[in-house]
Image 1 (cartoon, rainbow, N blue to C red):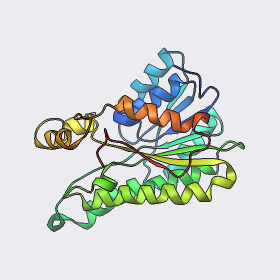
Image 2: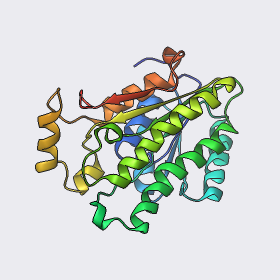
Image 3: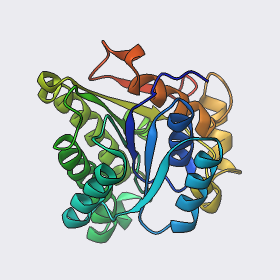
Image 4: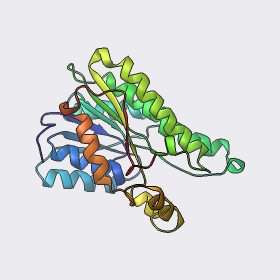
Length: 250
């Protein structure tokens, strides 16, 4: 593993499990000090911090419900207090819930938009106010659904299309401050959440594998490695991009 991120401070939201946890571990392995944010999964966050520190890295677990502006402000302040000004923000926290048009409710809409879109904006806002003077990188975790647009995912797909749009807007808005903004759009990745939803086997996975050129689902580590690249100076001339890590499925 390289030391591409040595001396950097990273905040990873929703990092107690799944893709977020893999990202936190990878950034730490490349030298970053990592704030592992969680909302309810304290045990998971503590486990990830333990994994990082046992390998000689620096990490802290910091609670924060990202739909609450007050908690977001405290999360960012606690990150800076523990580790220093932020160089890297990974907006990973998100929820998904599928429904046909006929089943969409206000609660279904707000549960996803309040975290996936508003939460991302709030964390970005407060983090940017506390970024290191030299700038840095924001990596948003979007989803391949923003272009694949599967049936029965109107609200979730809309949140991720919003993330893609926000990535493009903020890449222009924050460029004068030397903050690059990109998004990574994963395909189907087998995580705890996917297993809990029963999607890791059966029709959904078979369909994904049948239409994906690489003919398989992905691993969380395959997303984390791309995030680490976009967060590093190796990607110093890349901003405003949505990089689809979907095994070729578009």
